[in-house]
Image (cartoon, rainbow, N blue to C red; front, side):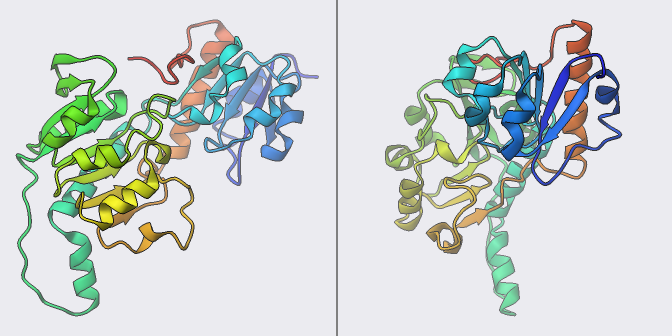
Length: 321
């Protein structure tokens, strides 16, 4: 048997590129597995690369993690593996922070521009061959509340400020002189009435789950648009549907939903003021390569006994910064 640790790699239909994983294979025994074989792959494994970052298989296979010391998540959000037993263990959790930041910020800007310039309606009119003059909105000067002040939230803030938007943040600690947000508040409902656009990019924790409910939507301006690039479970979906349907808010762009995938008969599909994408806001060409590279770079640090990058605070459920 090869010397070195056993590394399990949890994947779905897509498997990490073997050339990119060559450095890992040279120093460890690598076990590739889908969710159904995770428990078997975990026995004796000291490290786990969760390449299938939407998996919910870990709690059911945890009993087999008899030697696990390090788990690396191939995404920024780690909520799929933040179950009580892992939180209480000594297993170090890292994530892929930094890979998706710019792409998600571009997505948010694109959705805001689509709302302001009414691009979905332009497509509908074109499909009907209907030449209809309409006016649009400026984004410069509009107000944006970004809920979640981590690395992705900061990148979004910088990009939106670059086009002249006025930005504030919502985070765990209030700050009045933040270089990216200007000001950061802690009271979501107090800040919501200020915003023309509300962007959700908070990590999913017990504190943030269902934070956007009927009360939150009622606090927004009637012309406000809601953009969710965080997690679907940040939102009470029935309350969002109601707010969109009765004019409490003007629109929503949803890259994440609850439930996910969105069932074919769900009312969100057919609402004219909703823009839906299938959880791919950060998935630009080459993203899988960057995810694997982030893991292999951390693997080398782990093998060499150096501090790991992007260590998750398991109490908080994200990488503090």
